[in-house]
Amino acid sequence: DKLLERCKAAGYKTIVWTVDVPEVGRRPRELKHRFKMPFRLGPSQFVDFACHPHWSLSTLMHGGPTLANFGGIHGEFDRTASRAAADWALLQKLRAKWGGNLVVKGVLCPADAVRMKEIGVDAIQVSSHGGRQLEVAP
Image 1: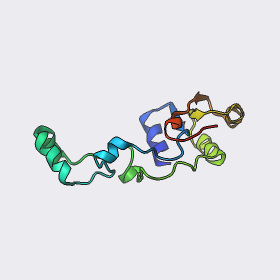
Image 2 (image 1 turned 90 degrees about the vertical axis):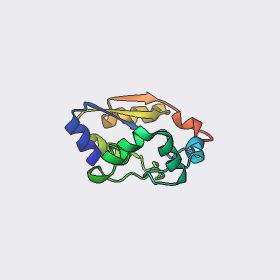
Image 3 (image 1 turned 45 degrees about the horizontal axis):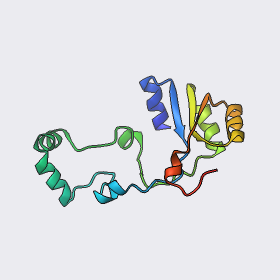
Image 4 (image 1 turned 90 degrees about the horizontal axis):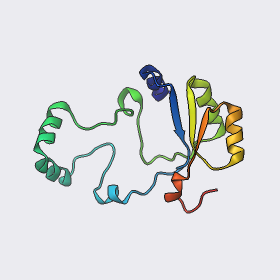
């Protein structure tokens, strides 16, 4: 709800709801570099700070990196949380709350596309983006 309100306040006319990746993908590069959200200091970060003094000093003076759309007044973000809660009831709720254009990305089944049209979705994007992270897709 908070993110939708922020979209409205910013003047967005269209939002895209992505449903093709129900689980967070394994990201080897992030694992290799021990990337975590929220950001936490560790030994490798001090090496990065030393290699990038301008950025480091600016960050110290103005605060650490944050996610602009999540945290604080915009709600919390858990990158590891399942996204499998995308269902028809949630789509109907989203359609009722969002008066602008609603695009659903990740549609693979023609019957789902027809049902989305009946619910009031303005457009779909056929995508199997999740195919790179899942064994199979319908």
